Image 1 (cartoon, rainbow, N blue to C red):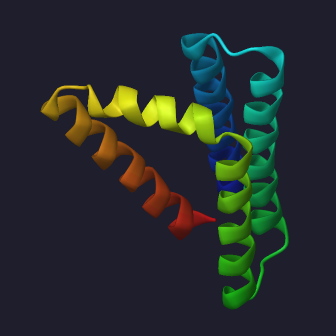
Image 2 (cartoon, one colour; image 1 turned 60 degrees about the horizontal axis):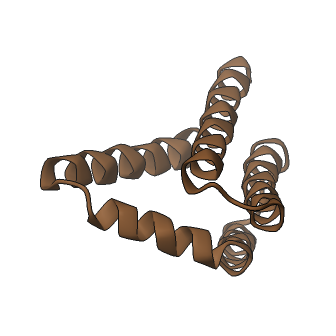
Length: 112
């Protein structure tokens, strides 16, 4: 349980850091900033409740897809800007980003 708590704290710190970077990089107005913050809070709450209250497999995917859908609806314009920024990166940086975030998702699914 201690490892899970430390791992969860590290993931939450990464989400908060990335949210702050996105808000600062895109110079978001107050409304869009609130939407991005709500989206990141939804993701954090999903991870915390998943670690503390294990869901059945089907409910886990249903809730996860619902939260991803809500995040996309809330912050579609910001996601679109970030995707354009991602596509403008060099190939090496794209591959590094894809590998890092894929590995992060896999490790999170294994340990939480």
